[in-house]
Length: 263
Image (cartoon, rainbow, N blue to C red; front, top):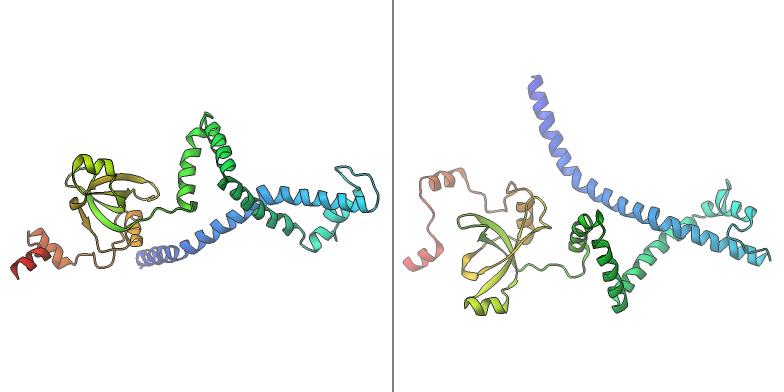
């Protein structure tokens, strides 16, 4: 009885955890991003805004403009129990301006001058002893998730990779390169083969079009299949026990092309 209770508890606990984790992880990521912006950008912008407010008040009252400003005024803004800064949620100014600054930085990076400037900085980063081993991997992931030009997949296929007899699920990204097609004299396609359990990495291969098998599934099904290591089968692709027994006996279903030829 106790063993059955433990098994039931484990099964339903894992089921509940699997249902809750996607929502919880999504919420955690959103909170982390907002906290990151507030802590590492918004807090410093907030201090700058406070300093500007202090200087404006001092200027209005005809007092000397120093970095610290008037202590009484600074206490009113920042440290008092009924401080104006906290009472009216003025700290949100720095939080909002942090997003505005990130937007401005993105516009700058998109410009001709900004792209060259950022490439120069990244080349310097790639030369740093420890950072060069970490930064490129993080950049690959962030570029994949946040880049404006997403990788476009036309369909899901199966291809014999990394050798004959081993089939991998891949995503067709484009036609083959012109030079390669001219040299081989055949129709080629470029296929991205995602790796498990992180499909953001993988291998890009070029194969003959006739050597790929189109699979009746969408991109999401293919990615779920890859992430789960083949545990989550696309709908309609799971074999019944009867079909498995027939296949193991060598009784394969007749191909569609054979049916058409017979007809």
